[in-house]
Image (cartoon, rainbow, N blue to C red):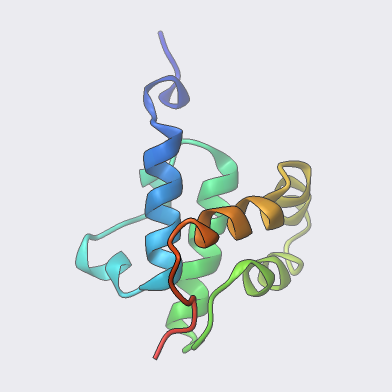
Length: 102
């Protein structure tokens, strides 16, 4: 039996992560959950974005996600191991729009 990661599209996953960093209200609009993401890294990033949004964060960028994940040892180690900071910077830079939310 194939694993879920074999069926996931990494490009689409990254696009979704970039979109919810820019507009986290999309999480509720499309009923997104961590289970929408096959890889642990993206599950952790999703959960960080969702929590930051629910706590009223006005800016969600790579540094803010990284700082949030530092609270959780296993998640932060996974984030570091997968070069999460650089990955999120690359994802959001591909949108060519500011990451600051109103």
